[in-house]
Image (cartoon, rainbow, N blue to C red; front, side, top):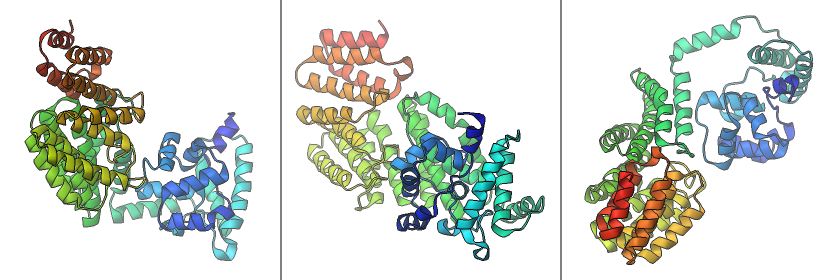
Amino acid sequence: MDECEARRSSYPLTIPDALLHSEAMQRACAARDFQEIFRLVNRRTGSSHAAMAAAIGKMTSSRVSDIIRGVRGIRGQEVIARVADGFGVPGEMLGLPTRPWEGSPENGGASDRFGAVTQYFDNTVESGGEEDTDVDRRRFLGAAAVAATGVVPLPGIAEARQGINAALTGSNAGDLAYLDEAFERHRGGYRGRPPAVVLTEMRGDLDLLRDVLGRPHQAAVRADLARTAAGITGLVAIIQHDRGDQRDSHGWFTTAEQAARESGDRHMLAWTLARYAMVPLNYGAPRAAAELAAKARAEAGRKPSASAALAAAVTARALAATGDQQGALRAVADARSAAEQLDGSQAADTWFGYPYQKHHVHLSQAFTLMGQTREAYAEQAAALALTSSSSVMTRALLTMDEATCLSADGDPLGAADVAVAVWEELPQEYQGGLVRSRVEALHQTLSGTARARVGDALAGR
């Protein structure tokens, strides 16, 4: 890509009128269904994910891909405004104020403006000026206003209005939008990265969250901020759980629960409690886990949702660990029923979704704990078929379920071989926390040569 093409890619796509006024686009914009909006732009204009991201600005092509697949969404007003400007969607269609580049009906409206702006843009880029992208964009928007209205904008007027608006509404809008985006960015999971790396990446966002929470907010804004806080702190709690820091994980989940209750979002509260239950579940306190999971199910209600399915699956695991096999089987049936009824966003492969891969992982552990090895092997196979090769921890946990099942089936040496193989293949940054607890749990059930093999591996001999 030469310099001219690179600069051109940073400008709005200005989607065609036929698409803009289509029933599908009108319906998607009215519902703020950005997954559908992005799909329509991608498919009907042939624009690449990279071109769409460049047009919107402050967005990566991978995020565009995630939005199209329903893995992530868009909520922040600042991001929505960038989408409108990047795709040339009038503000009214997305519930925004009139955009600076919109033409008035008397002067021909959006369609004529698009032609004039496109011509101006071509002339500007082809002139080969050395101004940076931000300057080019400001000139582009200024020319859009001229093309649409015939009025030359006065220097500093737009900046003055923005300053007055900030003074009237407070200076939190940018930070709130950023935190909302940070929540979306982090909720996607490890994606092949070690837990400690992800936690390090979140440090700056946690500092900003603490600062913003200390500021005054209107009630509705405070509720949204509390929900974002519950999500972000819940993610930290998950990472600390996976790293084996039980005490800190408990603390973060307590904070997340408090934030979720303040937000009034019962699904967020149900998700937080269900994830919280996995701390005592995975570290030797299944009865406490069952109590937390029961609270999560009560908050989730009967309507199928990711939080309801997760709470049922965690209940199944907790009851299986306490020896209540009949209760565990009922919870398995509830989890399966809920999982079958989830829509695309609820079944997204994120820490807040309940995809079939995660469903099979939970049921593998439940059946393993119940000693129903045939069912457990089937769930392990189904989970592995859906698990990315980069998901180091998930694959290790599924393999440890297999080893535990082999031991239950009367093959302790085979179980030891499988456990030792997966342990020795693990990168050092994963040889702790949850995976280590599973290997240690198997080690305690073995005897003789099998026990010695696993013990030697854990000791690094």
